[in-house]
Length: 377
Ligand SMILES: NC(=O)c1ccc[n+]([C@@H]2O[C@H](COP(=O)([O-])OP(=O)(O)OC[C@H]3O[C@@H](n4cnc5c(N)ncnc54)[C@H](O)[C@@H]3O)[C@@H](O)[C@H]2O)c1
Ligand SMILES: [Zn+2]
Image (cartoon, rainbow, N blue to C red; front, side):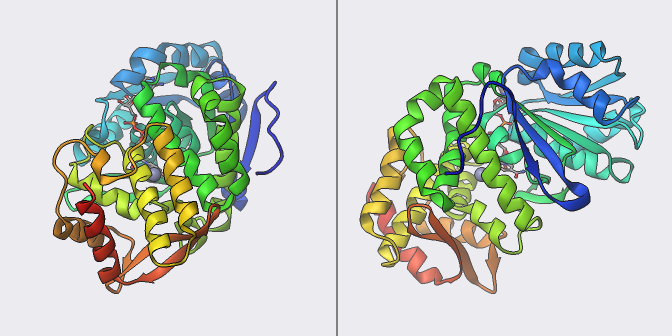
């Protein structure tokens, strides 16, 4: 784990992407500074806030007040909350809303919400008037540590998750950690899976710190801010090395190939949240690595034990409702975009904090491992 983060004032993490570089600012009570930040970044620009109905109830008034205080002309587009909004009809509504509000090339879109709003508003910004700049104001733990950073935007298609989209980096990310105080605990816990993921990918010291301090991270305060800042730094480093996911960035998919299959089988519903599916997927990926003889069994057990300790699902027996059969799961994994030439790409591990991209994993070995896990139930 790199140097401790100073917490008295906001922490800034730079995402170094040449002319597309930007800052992630992390700290408490940053939303009131949204207006002044935008006025500094783009003097005279208008701002269109895209948010969902739930986030609007909690935080839209404060966001609009901050913009108004800075003398910024403001528009808003409010969409229904939930994954189902990552769709063509809602995307169209946002694009039309931006045009109707006369948002021009030099104005800004502000995504105020979780990963759903961030992905949707990011894609709308990427395609409206051939590209509007966007400021991400993430309001879930998952969005603060993962989805608001790195520029992946998009919607879901009938064929699968995130299959229509664009890379569109934000010009600023403002992560106000006090906004998480209103987030339901189940969503906070789901986002925590992505935090633990960074430790398991390449930072064993961070993982050990989380094992010791996760209760404080959940309670809020300095430990939570620290976990968010370390996570953002990890993501920023990987994205700067591989913006378009041709190499290292694939590491961020740890747990996601298994996870997406279960998420899809649950119909992208509240039955299994994205982060919950990722936790299960990480436990399976670490277990599979041990099964293949690549990873000490004790490391696989340790990863799983930590995710289970915070209350995340780590085994098929933790899932509610109907569990898909092995045939269906294999089909869903094959449909996932991380498949090349019939071989499955998995992120596997040699130790806690030593994950690697395995591009040539034998589908039969995956099937045998997963079939056995389904029988554990
Ligand atoms: N672009 C990327 O790199 C990337 C990375 C990871 C995940 N994602 C995407 O992110 C999405 C999941 O994001 P999410 O978990 O943030 O879900 P989400 O955006 O649906 O938010 C979860 C729920 O919490 C509510 N909410 C949000 N902030 C709140 C707050 N502060 N107080 C009270 N309620 C609040 C929302 O209205 C929603 O009902 C998925 O679609 C996933 O594909 C994208
Ligand atoms: Zn994820």
